[in-house]
Length: 249
Image 1 (cartoon, rainbow, N blue to C red):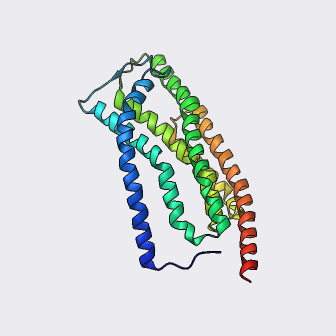
Image 2 (tube, rainbow, N blue to C red):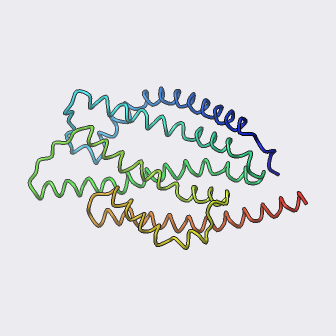
Image 3 (cartoon, rainbow, N blue to C red):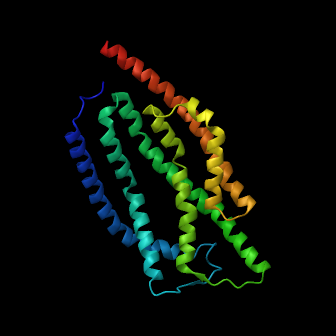
């Protein structure tokens, strides 16, 4: 059964509480990010993709910019379970008891999908893109002088969006449980969703067919998985509402 309705003031107070907790843990995570950024940056410079490249600093601030970017990205990843839990804690009073238990389980799934998306992009897509770019430079007899800031920005822009895009099944499942979307609606807009995913893939990847397909096809599969997950979540939500209505009756 749902909890009693909260007033607007109670909602604001609860939101303020959740934000304070999130900011506190984010501050702690930033400190951890500053400690972890250096070994991670050094490691990434000695991977197979980067070891044949000479990374240069064209501005005095480039090393600092790279260090700060990694520190905050690491802090966000560390804090993400806290952020998701605080979001769940804020909306959970409006859910049924079974829905609260189910949606709480979305947090580890979401984190796992985020890491899977980053891993897919870094270990499969990124090496191919780097080889493709190097191949073009060699064919045109161009000597690449690569800035460390540009290299890591390119790496981040290619991997982090994939981590976010891999959240699609969890987001769809969550929205379905809340009654915002249905599997019927997702099936109806499939062609528009595919077009949107094609545009997103084009924005992430270089203008080359193979890398574009390497991004588009997994996104299409993720969308189809999202529809299947939505059907399952929709049936569960309908069953939960029916059971709760019988209890109240």
